[in-house]
Image (cartoon, rainbow, N blue to C red; front, top):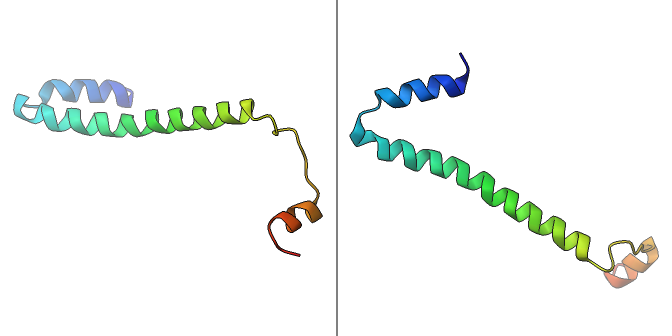
Length: 69
């Protein structure tokens, strides 16, 4: 039996007064992944739309810009 199947069976055994706790926990662990996915997608889209994404810089140019010379 898979973990998901075991979880579904256990849900039927949870008393009604505890369902709110389980729901809040599940919403919490799934919300983080959704937020992470949205954040990563936003970064990816910004990269795709960046007009300078294909520009390259020499080490000397970077050191000069960063004040490391």
